[in-house]
Amino acid sequence: MLINDIRQSARTRTKELTLQRWLIKGNWSGFFACKGIIELGQSVLRTGSAFHQSALIHLATNSVHFYWSDTDGRESELLQLQCDDCSYVIASEVPLTIDHLAICPSASAIQTRATICRVVLQHLNSFPNCVTWLRAHGRSSLSEVMSSLFPLSVTATPEEVILYLPRCMIGGFTVGESTQASKMLRFHSLTDGHSALDQLRFKCLHFLFTHYQSLKPIRVA
Image (cartoon, rainbow, N blue to C red; front, side, top):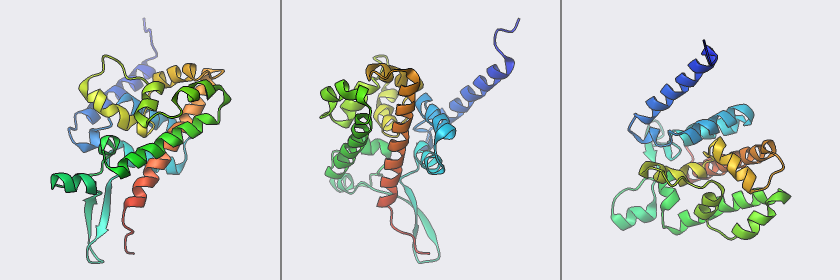
């Protein structure tokens, strides 16, 4: 007797194998390989715009800090944005990846994280049911806000701890985390809560992608 539809089982297994292949890449492109980013992708495909899809590709593949630079007007070289402050301190290049941005102590990185935090707080402020939570967390840092909304499991591995804030910054929280946040924020229904948090995903994607694009030099046509 078949308990589950064989087609559904096949789709589930395909997703599992795809995630496994992504995880074992072992390079920078597999950094964001996790359930939260897969569910972010599903949300973008379901209701996001073409801009969100483009942003997702660059952010989920951990390549948003790469850019093509014209060297002599005819040839291009693939370069990475650098964190100038940290590069100066350690006298070596430090790529400005999302995970570096999440922990960098430089003034510019702190300001960027503060701006993301404002994006989150302003979005939630548009929902009257969030007022109680906002009173308690309206002056918190980005890491504190994300930890309150989407608490990390006490059984999280060291790799999951490292990934936690970067994935939340780009909207990579899971459906389960969104469900818990919806209840805590007192949305009238889980449907309303998931819809509001999907909108938050898109705002995080939009901000970070736009921010990184603004740091890149304009290519010569």
